[in-house]
Image 1: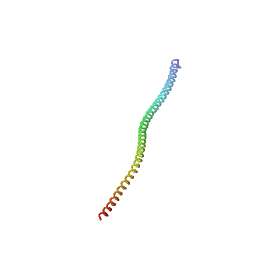
Image 2 (image 1 turned 135 degrees about the vertical axis):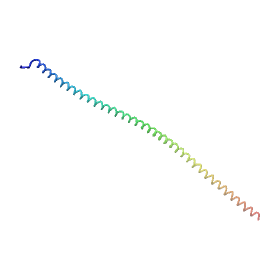
Image 3 (image 1 turned 45 degrees about the vertical axis):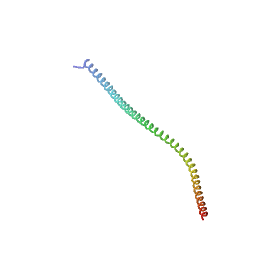
Length: 135
C-alpha cells in the first residue's frame, strides 16, 4: 500500500489551510486585543483629563469667588478712606472755627477782668474818698 492518495492530500492541504487560518485568526485576535487595550488606555487617559478639567474648573470658580470677595473688601476700604477724608476735612474746619472762638473768648475774658479790676479800683477809690470825707 503505497497508501498516500488524493484524499490524504486533500486532508493535508486542508490541515495546512486550517493552520494558516488559525494563525491569521490568532494574529488578528492579538491585534484586536492590542487595539482594545489601547482604546481602554486612551479612555482612561481621557477620563483623567476630564477629571482634571473638572478640578481646574472648580479651582477657577473658587478663584472667581475669592476675587469677588476681595473686590467687595477693596470697595469697602475705598469707601472708608473717602469717609475718613471727609471727616478729616470737617475736623480741620471745626479746628479752625474753634481757634477763632478761642481767640474771641480770650479777648472777652481779658475785657471782663479789666472791667472787674476797674470796678475794684473804683470801689477802692470811692471807699478812700468816703473814709477821708468821714474824717
